[in-house]
Amino acid sequence: MKIQALLLLPLVFVLNCKSSKIEENNPNMKHSELTLIAKGNLYGAGEEGIAKQNTVIENQSDWEQLMAQMNAANKVSDSFTETKIDFSKYAIIAVFNDVKGNGGSNIELEVSTSLEHNTVVTVKYISPSGYATSVMTQPFYIAKISKTALPIMFQ
Image (tube, rainbow, N blue to C red):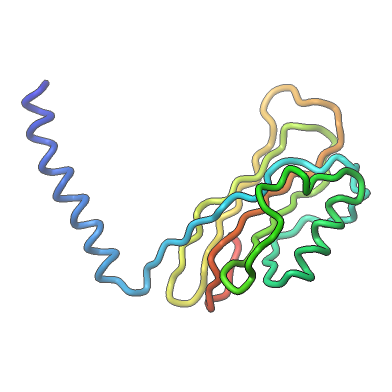
């Protein structure tokens, strides 16, 4: 078993180096990180008036308007990791699902990948498995991403 591990170790190292070189040699490939600001559910049964959407916020006024709208029924912005954003360096990605008749729904965003023509953000809507609480919820996910000149596309 140890011999097999020792034989595989150089192979893994070589493959890892090749993968890094591919990214270095391809100027069109760049990875961006999402920084989570808030993730959870709104519990206002739709009182917030936020439709299912994927949106990019690039200025303070729109950010304050979104936070005020989210706070219409409950003060959810108190749980945000940050509310003061430097919009000269960052943009906000805000994803909202439909209002659900039960709990347990969730949203996940994968790290965005910048290509030559756009930045791609993959959105996954996760439904509850098994029994779910009988409460109206609206899942949301808010993250910060480094500012880019490329348009942000959602998948």
